[in-house]
Amino acid sequence: MPTVPEPQQPVPVIIDCDTGVDDALALLLAVRHPGLDLRAVTCVAGNTDVEGVVRNTLTVLEQAGAPDVPVARGAERPLIEAVRTARHVHGHDGMGDLGLPAPARVPVDVDAVTLLHREILASPRPVTLIPTAPATNIALLLRTHPEITRNIERIVFMGGAVATGNATPVAEFNVWHDPEAAAILLGAGVPITMYGLDVFQRVIVPGPDVRRLRASTEPGTRLAGELLAHRGPATDESDPGGGLGDAGAVCAVIDPAGLTTQRLPVEVCLAPGPGRGQTLVDRRGRVGEAELHGDTREQPLVDVGLDVDVARYVELYLTAVEQPRGLAA
Ligand code: BDR
Ligand code: CA
Image (cartoon, rainbow, N blue to C red; front, side):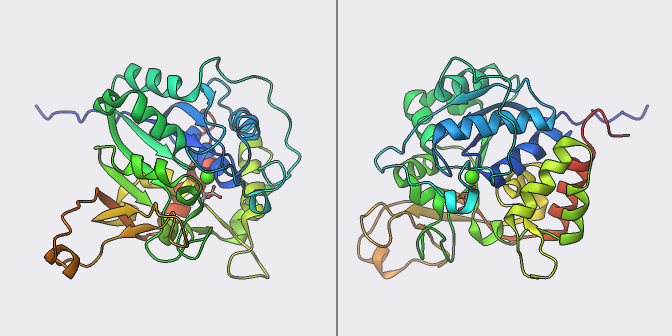
């Protein structure tokens, strides 16, 4: 008798974010895609202060139709650095100043590290962590509960850059904001995918699609359109689209085949000065003079995103966000 294939179970995921316009796009996708089971969301200072991140995260989950996903407040500043927000990108409220309503609920009464610990251990299957923010909460989790890695499947994080940075000429914002935390994340000892600026900046939803989303009467779909419009203009000023940003990291969990990666050694530059926060990705493919002359340091191997199927991820995003669970045929 032919065997009936087991139905694919949704992947248990937790998002650690600094919502943030594109973090909000990521949350909308994670809530609405049937391939994911969003078990919790943890908040950290980054794009805006942590109070604002919590408020924005709760509001987005309510608009997305997922008011029950537990949300916890996390670190209010990086391990060493001061908070350096990106309100010039994400608006004064961190959500594009779209005038969104205040959330009806409050976060859970435990901190982010406690919620991460609890939810990861409670998951019947290993959890995929999706940090889309400075890695402060993740570093604190790994240092507080190192045994937690036994129930972590992989970490797919937005951060870093092979080529050009954004916060500095070489450093990407999330890693620059808390370089020590990023270094701890990279050393977690679980499989890690780096969804860095090289791919992050490429996935842009075309203008006509953004306009269609904005015209929707369904609150979550309309919010996705408003957020994408805030992230324009892209290349064509006359019909600006909007970048998926952090949501691309969620796409990489749902559909890893859309992301071309190479397993490479990655090191975070922690030294003060112009290189601080850079992700040094070793693409040499050979032993260099440094190693020949005694440099025996080994860097964590990371699956680094080098290319992305833009049309595939845009399609994935639109399909999920326009067909909310329960409303889909
Ligand atoms: C990253 O920084 C934030 O502004 C975005 O949300 C993204 O996580 C890009 O450098
Ligand atoms: Ca972010």
